[in-house]
Length: 113
Length: 110
Image 1 (cartoon, chains in turn brown, cyan):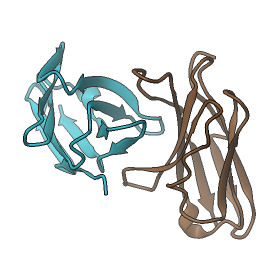
Image 2 (image 1 turned 90 degrees about the vertical axis):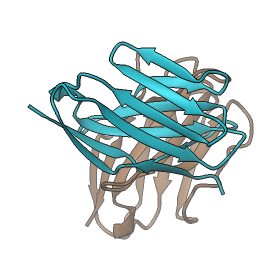
Image 3 (image 1 turned 60 degrees about the horizontal axis):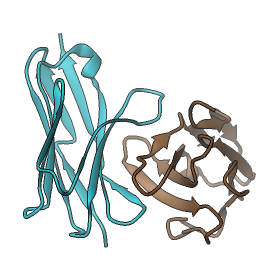
């Protein structure tokens, strides 16, 4: 597609439920990133995928968080047993290394009640 | 670990005045420094970037300067307009991952 697409744009869930967030990168972009942005805060790195290489999961805050990517296409970020502190905007970005910069999607606003 | 500090956190300027946002990075291997603008409800958009082999880059009313020795880089917006109001993020990249600053909320007062 023309840009990075994320769905849903908004998600309200009850504490303890699982949620799945989706990211469609720009076609041909081999690198995909997930970031978390808490209200009024900066962007916190979560995970990085590059082609068929092992992902860099060093930013995932707990084992309740996981992400998958099939080849160089769609990625899903899953949060299990959601907690109120998981409330944030989850941003996805894709790029074409080595010189391509990030293009961000519009994010998924997650609210845990 | 890698860190990027950004100042100020909020900045108000009169329309037509200049705005300057400053960032400092810790990883001396950083070689790429993008700036992003984020409007309410949207994802960050790249507005300008600079690579480590360049000291300054300009694009119309926006310019970025880089001091590698001091590990400082700055965003300069001249002749500010109300539509420049947004949150601005700096970032530094050493390998494949961007480390972002905490953002500056810029308000341009008409």
